[in-house]
Length: 235
Ligand SMILES: [Ca+2]
Ligand SMILES: [Ca+2]
Image (cartoon, rainbow, N blue to C red; front, side):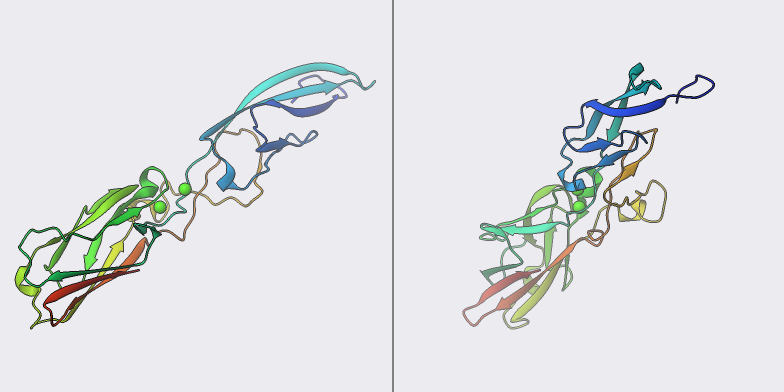
């Protein structure tokens, strides 16, 4: 804004530095536009410097001012928890164990990593094993970003060839703080792309649905004649 009275001169806006190629400014309106998709915004904050030049009626620069503009990037919850085996993402895991394994024993030979590559609360989720109750316990029960998944025997008697030849379990990975983020409060707003921003530029929020429900996988436990218990984990 030019505080001079009378016939105000034309103002021209330009980005001096700090945009890293991710933002552009409209020379006449001063509107700042995101030029990359949100996923390509690698920094948590961008410190832009906007230069405003007043152009005289003769066309020559009359006065100049520079103002710093901070744009903060808020993480979007766009990654669901995903299970990984030894060779990458995996939605089915299998294992055979003898029936009646010792109580409290960790099931060996089963390497499962679960990962959510968002940040902070967007990467926090619970880990649950749904199926015949009290047979196995999954550890950890709450994950931030990444954890190795361990399954521990809780009820040796239930893992019995004569009782069950197949036991099926299902992993669930619901967001840990689903209730808090749902339904307003500090909820995020979804911005269209490309985003058109107008001053004051203090915050650009990114968020998303899609990952709210977390992730699930299945785990059939098969008891064979050889008196093995087979464990299958399927997503
Ligand atoms: Ca994210
Ligand atoms: Ca997530």
